[in-house]
Length: 278
Image 1 (cartoon, rainbow, N blue to C red):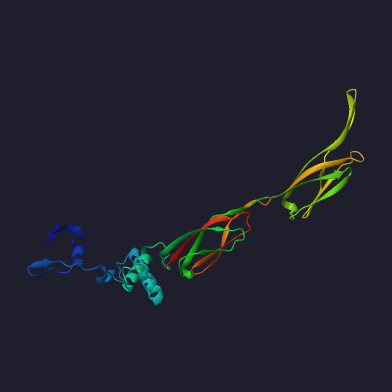
Image 2 (image 1 turned 180 degrees about the horizontal axis):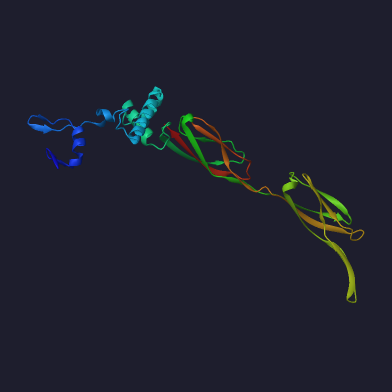
């Protein structure tokens, strides 16, 4: 083992160890061994043969973030300084920027950090176009997340009427329906039976849908017997049921406006999360 003033190092590392140290000096009868930092060793400086791939990548990353900071205007730099009001200096803002750029969650080219998070919940009416009031933010540095939903219910129309033998009757619909997504249910029947001494005959039938258009349901009755009238009830169900989600309309300094993707059947509570970045 090679001995160097109170230290023991493996002999195979002695040469490397000596090359990384200055000659020991004595000051006021105290002996010092001063280290030579890697960037003071020529082979470890930029372009040196001892610079590893990992070192080069880290140095390039540092220079990238440093140079990006130099392109920022004073107002943007001040935002970084204001991130921690306890430190009123550009130096803190620069250090914060560099730390986030080197170790933060954002991409290396666009280092970011969160300045504030606001959560607001309001009821959004079926008419939509709801404005959420927030504390002042920079609209260019904001991301808005929306949570909540409403729904559209099936449109159901019910009624009753009568239809004569071997004829049709029209039932007006309001509001109009889309026949392609509508189903009709009819209830009713008519007929006659002739029974004598345990035997006989009968003729029975039920009304049916003859046609369905946007504003009208047409019901028909088969030819059962002359003069017969059949009462019936109907239900027209337009299959519109679906979930409806809110969408972002605009971002202003103190207001976030959202709307419904489609007009829902009922109002609903919606929560927004407003994240402002530095």
